[in-house]
Length: 289
Ligand SMILES: NC(=O)c1ccc[n+]([C@@H]2O[C@H](COP(=O)([O-])OP(=O)(O)OC[C@H]3O[C@@H](n4cnc5c(N)ncnc54)[C@H](OP(=O)(O)O)[C@@H]3O)[C@@H](O)[C@H]2O)c1
Image (spheres, protein in one colour):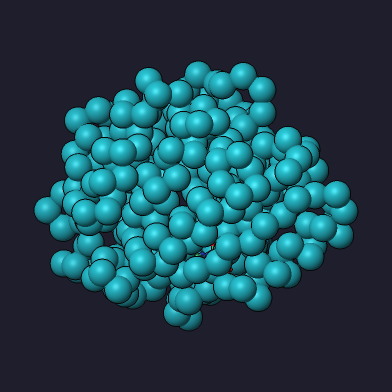
């Protein structure tokens, strides 16, 4: 076992997540590529090793929309950490995300953008909390400036009444900030620190995966105005390297103001609801974490 620090990155097979994994591998971190499919993970690993022949890369894959898959991937990561990394997880980047055109649900019946963009990171973080605590680790969520234009729909979190995909996306990104805030309150005193990153508008394929014609068309035009993922990735390295930074929400390596909706009251409310939505296992992990 080398003494490299381990960082797990979800959604590391393309776009922002891949650029983060690439930067981290180049800086000597051991990188856990967490992807959707085995095929995309293998391709990402091959590209990373071609660029950084000495890198230590391990792959984990699953459809993180569904909680049983999140739990399985978390168990595999824990097992690998215990076997080869001293049981320590230095960093977790909750970055996997999706856009949908229609109301679609996870196996548990949760709207898919809420399930992947919010609940998957929430549950994975709780599941890996003992390993993060052991390393006094850092957890990053890929949020978005779009959280500013949203309030949580407390009475209809899955947006079943008059589904609007953009509203669902914005709510899931507001949920990232609320979660980071709640986790800082709950686990900050135990040495784990939580941040959110606004990557800006980035030229990736997110709006063209599993979406219909209209979303596909709009995103294909919009992404052309986006920056390259490598530029967004620098802020992740800034938050993972060196001393811990003051602040919750970062863009371009600087702390930024977030929406006033990101307050303790809302953070705690979402935290309690999310624990319930993630079931008894999450409540146990929270207690043990
Ligand atoms: N692009 C932007 O302008 C922008 C702006 C603000 C925030 N963000 C956020 O940035 C994050 C990364 O997005 P991106 O723009 O880099 O898009 P991307 O290239 O499509 O990356 C998304 C990643 O998530 C993975 N993923 C998708 N569905 C999954 C599932 N069900 N289970 C497990 N993994 C899954 C994808 O794997 P596959 O490709 O194999 O499905 C891919 O690795 C997202 O959270 C997004 O909301 C993006």
